[in-house]
Amino acid sequence: MNVEIHIANSNFIGYAQEICDLIYESAQARGTGIAKRSAEYVAEKIEAGKAVIALDGDKLVGFSYIETFSHKRFVANSGLVVHPDYRNQGLAKRIKRKIFDLSRRLYPNAKIFSITTGLAVMKMNTELGFKPVTFSELTDDEEFWKGCQGCRNYDILQRNNYKMCLCTGLLYDSKTQPVVQASPFAKKVVKPVIKRRKANKMFKK
Image (cartoon, rainbow, N blue to C red; front, side):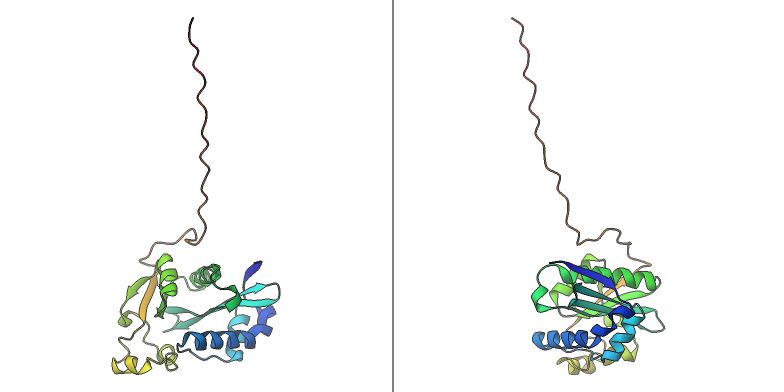
């Protein structure tokens, strides 16, 4: 696998529709809801440098983008997707780290949040310093919650007045969380233990 993860720019706009298709097919396979986005919307994120794209040569293999809410006080890393042929190889973690670092660089004072039922996503966020929170600590921007309308559990969210659902809320607040310096996904380098032979003792005759 020779995958490179790029911070998006106008050179990658041609992948916009393919990205939308990959996100949709992934959501269908998982049986979860999805905030539907047009190719034009994704292209805007790419051109603005608010996305990361993973490529194996010219082949699209992964993507994620940034959304802002509540006057840029909250940031969500959305649309994280990996091509089926490239899963279970740690690529999702690499993309997650890249979009997380980009979010902190572009919006250093914003709170980064996520809601998910996926164990893998919860684990990735936790390793980056996210903490579980109630929905009341997340954005109250209606545009974000509209993204839940395609979910099969949306009626549960509505019945609870958008305060509770089957998803877990996760939040990273740079003001209270320690800065993650090194990637928690990097492999640890284990130095080999070199055993030295003891010098033979000299005995007097």
